[in-house]
Image 1 (spheres, helix red, strand yellow):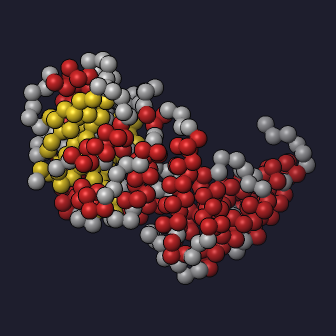
Image 2 (spheres, rainbow, N blue to C red):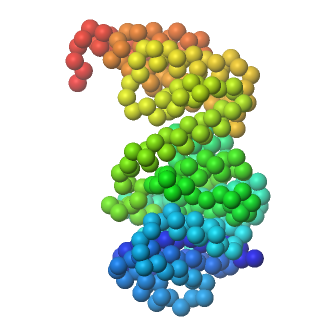
Image 3 (cartoon, rainbow, N blue to C red):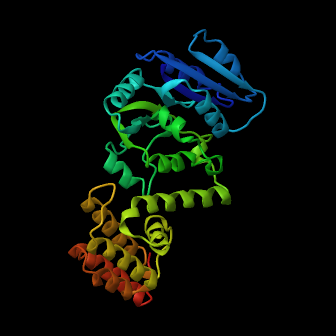
Length: 337
């Protein structure tokens, strides 16, 4: 069996494609196949791929544009490697990327996924993603804690459980996949930035989502909340309240804050276990609850009382003073600047 199958879709990627391919072919770890899917490109992408005479490259050519998710699923079916590595046609992999990810997964058989930190090519800034499983699982409640083209995955999990990307979740299909994979093993991000990630107007992740995609992403978030708190006897109403706690883009009304506070209090008083340390869960819930209080001062002084009525933790003195002043201004109808 090959060690690694690399999956890389390409659609009109001629500008950066040669650099991306070369960064894979010059990896210090060389036991891999490189599956490149030409997604109906109308530029020189296919010509650039075929200009490389390396037996590890396998070009799967299409004369029509299908979208990258169906091609990734085709790659999962074709892959012969023990591990599956992702790559995008506009990024650059560090020469040690495969070597370090392969070694990590070989040494940690309980891990299903190993990503890396990355550098943005535009600003040359390092993105500090969470490293360890507990921290990643906690972050997954409210962000996507991986850089998709940096990940290496354990292929037998996909084969044994018939797991594929969900096309309906584009362009957040990766987040939904991480949610499902969370039930099959641990996660990690290597601390070294082993991918150079290019940010530009054609990035799929930056494109607007339609209503169906937004709805599917919300469902994936709720699914992970249910998984994470499954041992805490959460009701559907509790899951919805937790979802609002993590993702609501507007302020809460007083009744929502009361409900939210009662849900948080339930976790403090219950003898529950989670995928991470209980203390970390409690700290996150309190942090998010107090944040929701600061964004809900349109309700006036009731918000200040809500922040102080629950016994799980008293707000810090400075926070309390600022919240009181802001709520008082709103209560008196003073326009905020």
